[in-house]
Image (cartoon, rainbow, N blue to C red):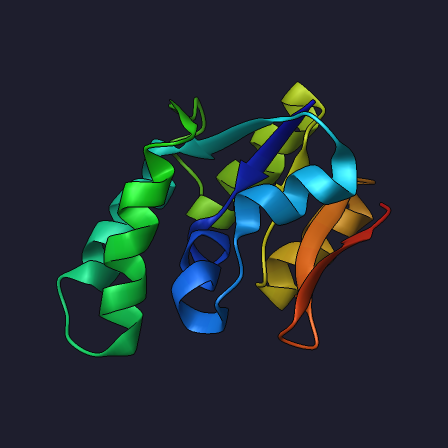
Length: 126
């Protein structure tokens, strides 16, 4: 099973002190972590700044190195829509804390892994 991680999911370890890879494995069992090139570019933009988010994004970039990085075929739409389309086309779950993205995924019957109560990851079935 593939789990696609978006930018804010890759920033969770610094922001909330949670090992997302082991937490996801505890939820779903063996899985293949995947992210999009677009997500790594988004993280690079955030990382170029200062502050906690920039530090979290720099760690997120390193964590993206533990994922298979895919190129989206849908370059004509925003990154969140690229994530939705990739998940639909590849039948994978998505790890995100973005409420709008989560809503869009659930409308397309995609399972979502999100941070609950800033303490643990949980799955919402799409």
